[in-house]
Length: 163
Ligand SMILES: Cc1cc2nc3c(=O)[nH]c(=O)nc-3n(C[C@H](O)[C@H](O)[C@H](O)COP(=O)(O)O)c2cc1C
Image 1 (cartoon, rainbow, N blue to C red):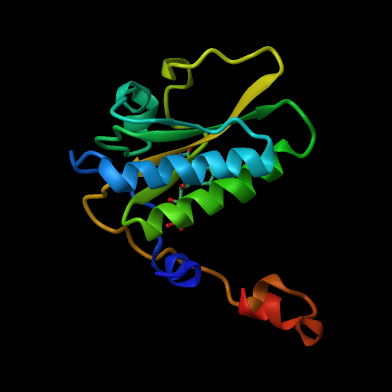
Image 2 (image 1 turned 180 degrees about the vertical axis):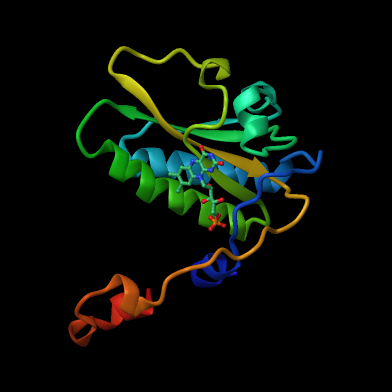
């Protein structure tokens, strides 16, 4: 699967099976995250078989079920770190999709204090991403047409139109 197919196929998933992230898929996911950390200077962490952060009132309120693995986007408290988290987080969710995994971005509805990581003084948790084998592959959300989001579509370069 290439990245464009992953973009088309990926939908958020909130309910997961008990299947563990193991073997080659686990190794590849770890490598993808390490690579993103190297490129970005972020401190992205993967927690496997760790259900506590998504076994909270907020997580159930957000309809999350059986989230046993998640990725935490940690970075310096700098201007621009949030944008980096968006860019590299999306790279991770798309590459996870290519490994046959499902994901969901989660900034609020989980238990931040349950994450087993001690933040350094200059660090902040920007967002998390639930990851695992979904009970379903999710459903396509409504999206806007290009005319609704781009004002001047006469001068779009091909790479932009393609996107
Ligand atoms: C940065 C970010 C943070 C999000 N945080 C939450 C959250 O805390 N709780 C929640 O229920 N959904 C949250 N969402 C929404 C879901 O991740 C998801 O995008 C939404 O269900 C739409 O699904 P789709 O990605 O398949 O279009 C967040 C989305 C993004 C992009």
